[in-house]
Length: 117
Image (cartoon, rainbow, N blue to C red; front, side):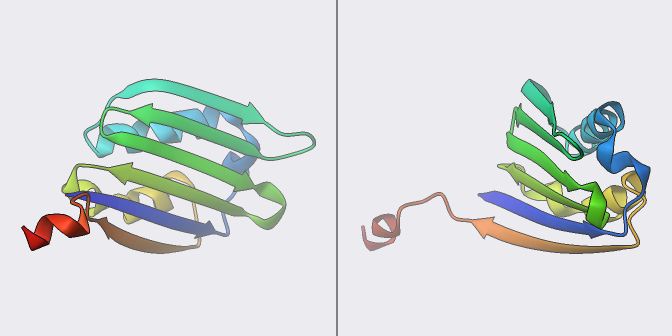
């Protein structure tokens, strides 16, 4: 029905405080999951850190960075169940992460009451 991917990336390099690099990585990842950007927003925090958010044709995609810790948090929510296939390796490469932890949550969009009918 729908899937949510929560990725924690550790040991990332220079990309974390670079708005252009974050945007480019997001575009590559969004393309990888066969989605299109409907609308996007990016914010650079002072003194460091970036948040990127996109409404995509299959739901949403977000990145939050903490450069001082070499950490990025990525969330992908999609009605395309195939989104999880290979995305962890791609994110690891895009962010030059030493380690990545990915959780996949299957979202059931049917109402619990639908099963009783």
